[in-house]
Each structure stands twice: as structure tokens, then as C-alpha cells.
Image 1 (cartoon, rainbow, N blue to C red):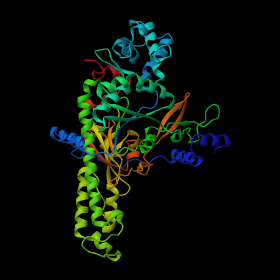
Image 2: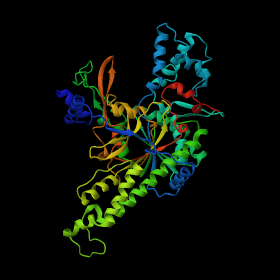
Image 3: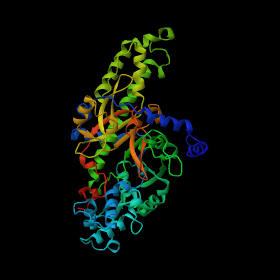
Image 4: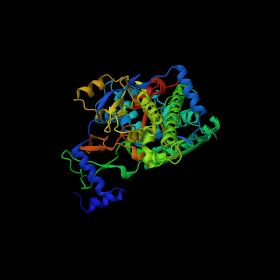
Amino acid sequence: MFNKEDINQIESRGSSVASVEAQVELFKKGFPWMKIVAPATPGKGICVLSDEEAVKAAEYYDNARIAGKCKFVPASGAASRMFKDLFSGLDKLKAGEDVPADAPAAKFAANIERFAFYDEKLFGKPADTPESRKDILSKTLTEEGLDYGSKPKGVLKFHKYPDGEVRTAFAEHLVEAQNYMRNADGSANIVVTISPEHQHLFEEAYAAVKDEFEKRYGVKYNITFTYQDKATDTIAVDKDNRPFRTEEGRLLFRPAGHGALIYNLNGLSEELVSIKNIDNVANERFLPVTAKYKKVLLGKAVELRDKIFGYLNELDAVTGDNLTIQPYPNIPGMNAIGADKVYQSTKCQLLCNDIENFLLNELCIQMPQFDDCKTRVMKLREKLNRPIRVCGMVKNQGEPGGGPFIIAEKDGSTSLQILEGAQINKDDIQAAAALATATHFNPVDIVCCLHNYKGESFDLLKHVDNEAGFISSKSYQGRELKALELPGLWNGSMSDWNTLFVEVPLETFNPVKVVLDLLRPAHQAE
């Protein structure tokens, strides 16, 4: 399948021929559909808190003992999709055509003065003419002006304040971090995943605000920029599942989606991590509600952590650490012959009943029946001793994004998962019905607990469902191809985690997927 040049290309990327061959096989056999039991809804998979409960959760976070925390911001890639419609409009205008008044390109040009990056010296005053529209689009997208078409979202100017201050998306994340992710010493740790070619842009954007923000908010920022490892890129194939080759005959590798960031997350030492996409920010006047519900998620995560750690410590006390046979309390000298009595004891089985009820009622994990008591204890311990994530969910208003569902696992249990549309078999009646009756979607507002009950970091790579990836259709220089997406960061990469979904207000979700989103109230001045 691969020649000598191919092998050199593969190995130079830090990958292996065996890994790439395995990827090609995945294209051939595909991925199994997720077996959906039901959509996660309020009262059955989604926790809806009263105002009083929300306050208590935030207070729980404020008073919790935490072994380090940080904000994790996926921010790699250029903002090309954000400006896709503008590029299309610019191409038409360059060809001598005009764009309709209701087209995104025309709307953008007509409203250019409302965008934070508007500069009258650069753009001049907009006019209702094709030439003015072409000039505005060109100066926004190309090197003739701002060159925003090739820059990452994080360094684009998103917001302008009444006093004239202008902030990038990255700057707004700095403002958020000092509010709800501040450490006891007044510092705030932020890890930003970027592309290597964009690092100088982020460093410039950071330098422009660092001193002012640290003085204004009384914070010390600790910023780390990390890259998505090239070794996680996946090979592309043609329609016949043969390795796709460029006109020069080289293999084509593509970034494998945000699922590759599980490697970056796995490298963190902090116990508590908040994840939020780079484009999901708002004007600072929205920060009170944003911070309030982020603290609610943080509090629910720490509360869940403490509950699970308590059960694991109780299991250790009753059965012995890691299921090794220890002397049973009050029965000195008990040896392995009497070990089964430990698991069959009333005390142990009552604890198991309590744990099973907790898993079912709090996390929608329905455990299967077990043939013996020891297996039951072992399986319950495995379910408890996993990374934890608490995910904010917003009511479905037609926004793009994955959805929360209850699915059937291979081991006979059920679990809460975030699924993308590509993972759902629309031809399956039950799956289609679950999709149709789903009430919420995933805004990527996640809090993670990454340490186990002994204070050790989990190896997150051991908790990935490698069968939860998917195949998508793409193109390269006008030629169609198939791309392989690794299990998404908040999909299959976190499949084997203990998961809690919590409803948060729609006001906390303000993504900028296309440039016209910046005209929404959350991104405009008063």
C-alpha cells in the first residue's frame, strides 16, 4: 500500500505505518452507530437547578479544596469558516457581479461600522455600491487590510466598549478566567491550544492586554500555548478507500478534529479544568451570569467528585484497597479462604446497593446484574474510579451542536453521552425518535475533574472509546475525499467518564460561528 517515500513521510510526522494502515481499515469497515436508549431530558439525564440550588453549588466550589485548576481553551485553526460567505461574495464582486442586499456579504458591508475591528482610516465610509462592498470585503479578508481570512478567531477583534476599548476573543477569555478560575494565590492558569504558525499572533494579543488586565483585575496570568500534535493527524482516502494522493503523489493527512486534544488535556497536572471554545465569549456586561453558572458547574463537579471519592473510600474500608484481600474489620487473621464472605457481607452489599442507586439516579448509569458479589464490587469500583465531567446544556433553539443522550454501553450498562449528528443512525426508528424529541444541545461548557481519589492524575487515553469516531466528506483542490475524525474531545474521547448534565441559561452561550454573529446583542456595546 505504501512505498518508501510514503513510509518516510509517515514516520517524519511521528506516526507509524501500522497506525496509518489501521486508519485505512476504519474507512473500509466504518464506525458502529451509537445505540440510543433515550434523549437526556430534564429529570431524566439533565439536572435543572432551582435558584437556591445554584447558589449552593457555587458556594460549594468557593469553599472546596482543589489541587490546582486551569481554563482550557481550544483555539487552533484559522477563522476561514467564519468568513466563508464573505469570501464567496468577494469572488462574485471581483468577477463583476453584485451580491443581493440580503446576502451575508452585503449585510456585512452595510454594517461594517458596527464591528469592533472597523477603522474609518482603513475602510472609509460604506456606500451602497458594488465597488464599496468589494473594497470592504477585501480589506477585511486579505493582506490588503486586516487579513482576517487567514488569522485564528482568538486574535480577531470581537468587542468594542463605550470607552473605546477593543478586545479580542482571547482577551475576553482572560477576563473570564480571573473571575471564576482564580487560584488561592491570585493567579489564573490558562492553556490555549493553537497552531504553531499562529503563536506569534497570540503572543502579540496577550502582550497588548497583559499588564493592563493584571493591574485592573489584580490577577497574575500563567499562559501556556500548546499544539495539536501532527502525529494525531489522520490519512485521507478517496471514494474507494484508497489513500488520497496530492498532484505531487504525496499522501494527504488532515487534522483529526478536536478529539486529538485529549492528548493535550492528558498532559495537564491540575485537578480541575474548565473547557470553553475560543469563540464562545460575550461583552463583559454578560460576565455576571456567565461566571455565576460556570461556578455552578464547577461546584457540581467538585460535589460529584467528593461523593464518588467517598464511595471509593468506603469500598476500600469494606473490601480492601484495589480488591486485594485485606483482614476484614473485627475478624483478625481472616485469609483468602474467607475472602468471599467480605463481598457477600450485608455491609458490603448494602453499600453496593447505595452505589447502584446513586449511579442510576444521578448519572443515568443502569448497571447490569452480576453472577457473584465480588464481580459486582469490582465493576462498581471501575464505574466510580473514572474521570469526571459536568457539562452545561442549553435548551435547543436551533443552534448547531451535539446533543445529550442516554446510550447503551457494550458492557450492558447505560451512560450519558454527547453525540454528534454523524454518530446517529437516522434510519433507526428509536434513534430518530430520540433525536426528534431531544430538548437540549451541547454548548461546550464543560468542567473536568482529572485526579482519582488517591490524588493521582488519570491516564485519560485509557478512557477513550476508539469506536466513537466518524467519517466525513471533504474536498482538496476541488477533488472529493473522505476524512477520518478521531473520537471528539467531548464525545468519544470522554466516553468512559462519569458524566453529569446541568441546564444553564441560553445567555451563557454566545458563539461566533459566522462573522454576522458579532452583530448579536451579546457582542455589541450597550
